[in-house]
Image (cartoon, rainbow, N blue to C red; front, side, top):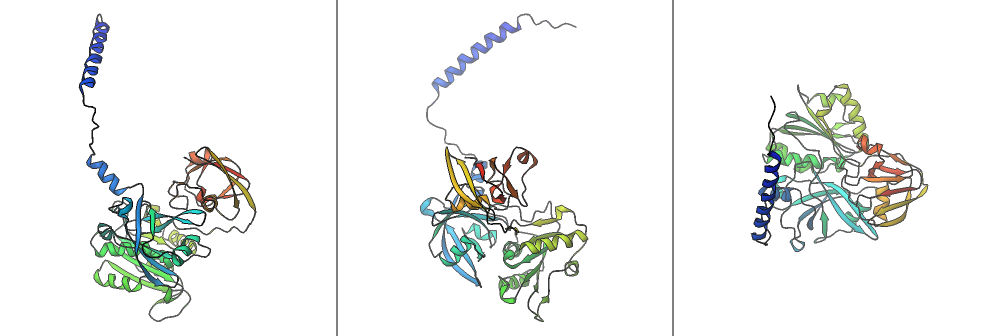
Length: 387
């Protein structure tokens, strides 16, 4: 059967010509006033994922030796009227200018999401050896100081679709901060799962939020806390390190494991959980600073291409490229500082770098993209920032 297409092209051409005239007529007769319509979905997205939030410090709480909690509220004078909601276990990245440096550091939000509805965040900061930002907060920050912070971010949270109803949370030292947020959320009725916290510390004085954790555990049968001391003997606590046998006491048929603390804790738990043959989807690690065994003090030249400029700064073998840029006052985007979030992704133009525990994808690796927060120089290096 043959189709008769005679005349179709001519008719279509005439219709198109007429359509163009109609369109020009509509445009000509339309108002020049901009359409100020914001859809509900855009409003929700802006509220949950603001580009920046401006906050000020309204309270500083001593939590123990070299640890303080900072209470943050919106800085309405700079335009932030409402703090974004967050999921327990997420963090914010805070921007700090110290002398000539510009630093961004991630800190877990250590309160219930319910507090965000009252426009309150808390972050708990422990002093770190040679920690420029942690030392600045503990020694210099005072009431009414103002900062710019990111929206809440990170994947270290409970997800009912993914995680088991029985959670074993393994914490070391200041790694308790995401779990105090989860515990608060359980008591507030925001989260619905059973959580056993195995909390290890060197001494009794190193336990953070102990009084609060005990109070929360009394309020909910979904929550229990077990304390373990590694360098003290106390009849009220377990002694030693968190072991396979300790963990096994609180396991049921299906379990999720959340681990947060210093690198030795991660290393130990990785070996122990392998013995249980736990599927990877049931094991969550927080994005904390890793331990990198770099003793070299070689000094290299780092060239940074950004915004049409070529900036030269020194970078030592034992410090990340991002840290060198921060010290040099080079503004860049960063959040997690462990190669997870991807915000600092940059092009390696030349040079050799050493990379630790980076989540960069195969395509980025093939085309020489790196995360400066997880890359250490092994020669002079040239990188190009994404803006």
